[in-house]
Length: 68
Image 1 (tube, helix red, strand yellow):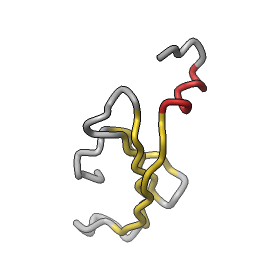
Image 2 (tube, rainbow, N blue to C red):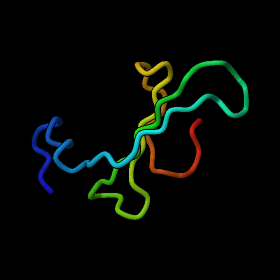
Image 3 (tube, rainbow, N blue to C red):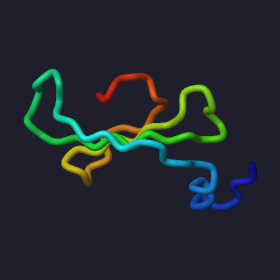
């Protein structure tokens, strides 16, 4: 894996699922988009991106089962 440019990180990430949900703990009424990915450096747990309202990035982490 050679990352001599930041944008090359996308070569090592493969999206697998998109989940659209509301906050199950009812902190707000917003819609959340969770993008699950495989990635070469975290093969066991993958990677997730969570967006509020579809455009505000609120979390990047391994796939730990938590959205917030």
